[in-house]
Image (cartoon, rainbow, N blue to C red; front, side, top):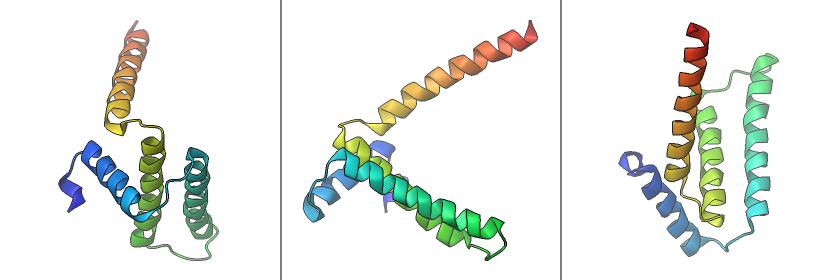
Length: 106
């Protein structure tokens, strides 16, 4: 089961899966597909907000999973390790939060 794997191991899984089952696409294709998946997610929340329907947590999870898969596919097409990129981004965020906290205390 993938759940207990690291972010990098999951990304590698999708890289191998795509290599075996799909023709490699250009990065732009994956970005457009990501936007389409985000649109599907937005549509669920829009329908729910307008009172048309109650969307199940399962359905929301399916769409979020599709979004995540396309993020992995984009990262793989750009040869970017998401675990490394995320770690760097979190470090920047920690520094920014620390700076903001020190400013508010002054």
